[in-house]
Structure formats: C-alpha cells, structure tokens
Image (tube, rainbow, N blue to C red; front, side):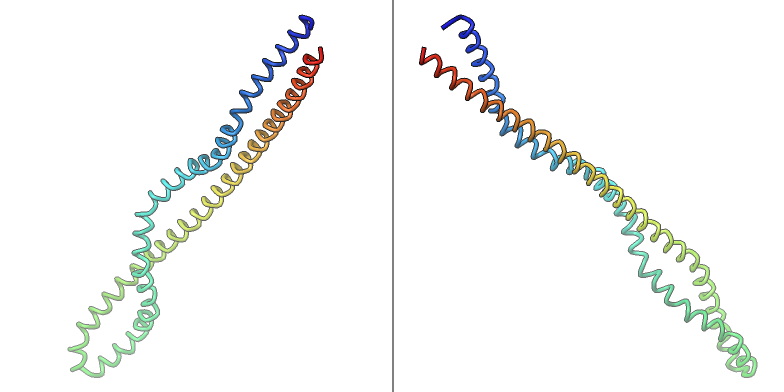
Length: 191
C-alpha cells in the first residue's frame, strides 16, 4: 500500500472519528432542542403573570364594589318614582295639617337621602366605565400576547426543523463515511 493511500485512509479515519463524536452529541442536542419551546414559553409567561398579579388587588376592589353599585343602580327607578310623587305628597300634606306636622321631617330626611344617592350616580357610572375600560384593555393585551406567543412558537418550530435537517445531513455523512471505510478496508484486505 502506498503512502498516499495510507494518508488518505488516515484522513478518512480521522474525519470518521470527528463525525462519530458529533453524532454522539445528537441525542442530547435533540433533547435540548425539544426543551427550548417549553422554557421559552415559560419565560414569556413570567411578565404576563407578574402584571396580572399586580392587577389583582385593583380588580378585586372593583369586583367588591360591583354588588353595591348594582344595588344602587337598581334603586334609581324607585328613587325617580319617589321624586315624581313628592309634589302630590306635598299637596296632600297641605290638606291635612296633622299629618303634615308628622311627615314633613321624615320626608325632608328622605329627600336628603335621595339627593345624596342621586349625587352618587355619576360616580357609579364612572366606576362602571372604568371597569369596562379595564376589561377591554385586558382583552386587547391578551390578544397581543397570544399573537406574540404564536409568533414565538412558529420561530421555534422553524429552528427545530433546521436542526432536524442538520442532523439528517450528519447521519447521511456518517453513513457515507461508513461505506467509504468499508470499501477501504476491503481494498486493504485484498492487497
């Protein structure tokens, strides 16, 4: 066997050893690649969760106010009806002096309470607008975050496909080297 053949065989053997070393790392690389989307998704969820956790006390407070506001809103028609009845009641009171003396202080107190409740109506409406705005903002933010997650998922999928192509290429190269070594060994044995 000539020196050139030996050098060629040595070179092929060294390349084969390098390729085998790389192939040994392929299962570990595959495992790491499979973990990347999961870890990336978890990392991307952290700011979202933190922001949501910061919003919880505010939302809880708003939710606690809803039954009170609802109850007050349910009282509005009743209050309006009572306000419409006031002139009629005043007329009746003027006709009956005894009742007038008894009812006027109570009615004045009721009217004061009604006025106070009516003063709270704009605040209640504003609270409802704030809550509606918060809900709309949360829906928009979640929609944007979902879009980002889907984009990240697409990028990860593309990276995994690229890695799979590289692995396939390495496996083909390893197979080709195995065939070359087999052929060279056959030639060496025949000489």
